[in-house]
Length: 92
Ligand SMILES: [Zn+2]
Ligand SMILES: [Zn+2]
Image 1 (spheres, protein in one colour):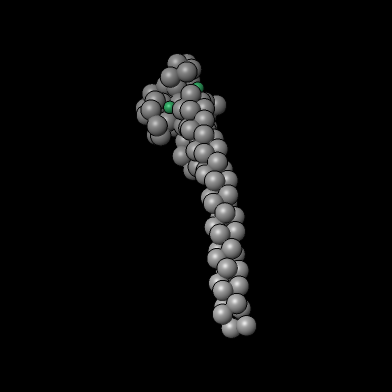
Image 2 (cartoon, rainbow, N blue to C red):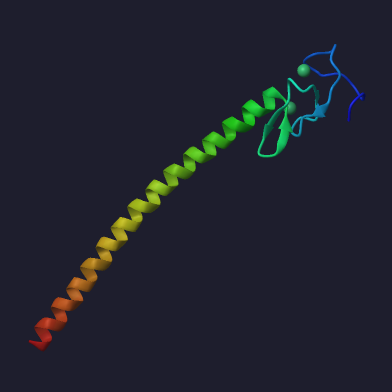
């Protein structure tokens, strides 16, 4: 990898890596490792932004799911109670 070009941020420095996302050549100082892949600083920023947004929406979905879970538990409890009352009134 070394000796094939210079860092696109630092033209005077030799590139040691390539950005996984934009394929630009980068030096050690400009490389950022995210999720096991090497990115330039610009791409690392955007990748972390996207990941943060996805994580945020996942939390939002989880909140909706837990709310629906509580509602369905309440409905099931009401149904079971209604069935029990029905059986009791029939039997008794
Ligand atoms: Zn990049
Ligand atoms: Zn650099």
